[in-house]
Image 1: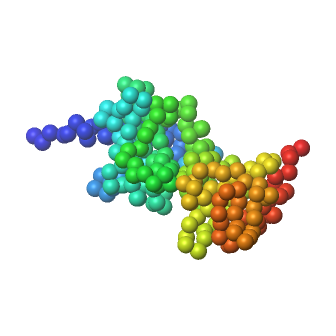
Image 2 (image 1 turned 45 degrees about the horizontal axis):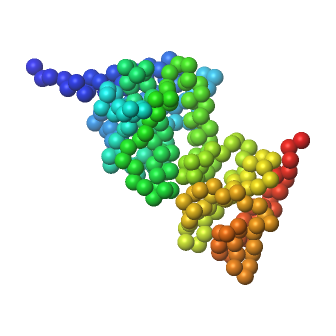
Image 3 (image 1 turned 90 degrees about the vertical axis):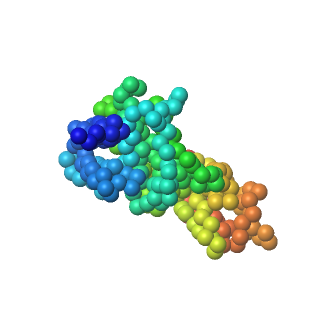
Length: 250
């Protein structure tokens, strides 16, 4: 009789645990056939108040102890890096480790984008033991992912990931790309006296800026950052169009 590999049994248990948790809370789980599994095991569409939403993610599921580390787990990226980072759906990694309490998760897409911003090649997705996925935490998890997906649809999610920051729902976020296709982002929080510049050439490190720091010529710059003319005029437009959002909140 053919023997069923232990790894397949462990994998099936892990997938079933994830499916059971999500379906227990009414979410839609579509399993990917093993023959078509190229780095994702499930598609999950979130449901709100009994209605299907537009929010869908892909999930890679791992089981057993092979991914375990002292402080959590690591899921190998392998040759999935570009797809997980740049695909049409965000990819989450979920590990099932019953000896440590059950399911743990991480946003693989976000980690890979951040590594790209730092010019690093990420070999594995880090999953913290604090990132628990269970009945008690599921609503918070779904809320975080629906906010993340909303920013993806707005076209600014990638920049938040690369800078490792969070854009609030009422933040003003204005992306720009110069003539050599280098992206940058103007980010204004409600009531803050300064804006934040996220810039490709600065490895996406957030830089606080104010309008008085901007000079248009003869060499355009803001703070100590040299700009080209288009970048400087774009920044001036951003400052002028968001002045009202920097006013103190009464």
